[in-house]
Image (cartoon, rainbow, N blue to C red):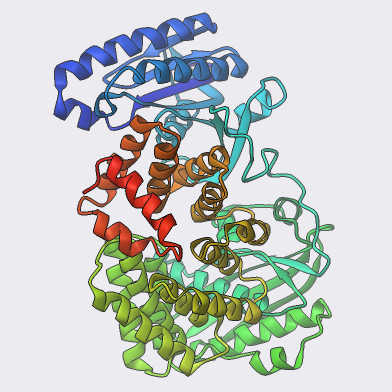
Length: 580
């Protein structure tokens, strides 16, 4: 077979099925015209079209620079043409670009290089461009563009993760929300810093992944509550799950001096846990241990690992930290197991998974009614149902409050319980209580990355958005590969301090990986107040796609602004964009 290295360009139309369903003839006319424009621009940038079935288009370029320049020219030209069409008939292409090895068969090309470009295309937003790390490395110093690093992505049918960047096309995207040069060496904090990598599941049963993940997360939680340590959040360390990595690379990418890694083998009533603490500068182990125990001893093993890490790093504990050390909040291994399973479902953030998580948390509470964390998680599942507009019955929020208050009453030292209580308070527009509860959670867990981001958006809703930026910056440092909602918090704060350009850029970043309802709501406001009415209507269409029953009444309920004038700005914008 003939092989070669080439830059692969893959594109398709966002919402193509909807366009065809609404007006087949008009869609085909626009598709034909746009395909001709794309073909011409590809040729002008020294590329060639390989194939163009349906709404897809595959092209190759000899140069990554030519491929990116061609993609930018295409998106800018199509944006101009779309402006002449009604919002419902606009055709937005998603583009992915990769540099890779391909197999050549006549005029066709095949292989992982092509597949990765197609996967990047599927991660792009309509009108956007996603590029792989191999492309970024070749273009970063050659083109006057801004690139947003979006972390390591696991994509379908590709064994290794793909480093992904987006190309920001709008002139207003001037304020980066993440370093364009990442992964790069982050400065070390002024205290011992550590990252706990996901423990490998050695049980031979993929169904046991939740258990090894739970052991890892508990260790992260235990360490993060120690004021003498700087601990990287779960979201960032779990990007390394299932990968073979060098601890020196982890240290550089996450900005830490130490790394914990290990494995869990669960078989019947026995469990084997191996753990080692490694110096990320030298790669050498500082401490290592293997534990062969009865499964019922798992809590004692977790506590011992925490104490050994603290001892090895010579961390001085405060009196309160010594008193809080140890304990999972339950003596029931079965209840603990249900919480681990429930959390795995909850983190998927879908209505179906949320319902399944709730059943798991309810099982845990039935086994141990005094289990504070199970109560907190169950309350959070009700709050998520409300916040995501899956069910806005008043009893949903009341049940969330009841469970959060119960969790705090059972264990006032549990940061998670105070955080859930703060979320419910915010939804009830009890702003001062929400802020106080969030600060209590951070006092108990100074490394609580999500807690800093949450406090940031509480302050924005309370009318203090200028205080949000520093909090989000802290959250991002503790969680360098942070979830999409950090960008939403940042974007909303920018909008409400009058920085629309930066706000739109941050909100678009938040939508790259997560189709977040609230990001679309904020985009409606931004576009409406900038008199970009067609774009506001497009954002409104996305809201109704996600939540078909969304209404002005629902918006008023889930937008807990303290200042009625700010809420009215949102309602006016949503109404103007067509919401009823």
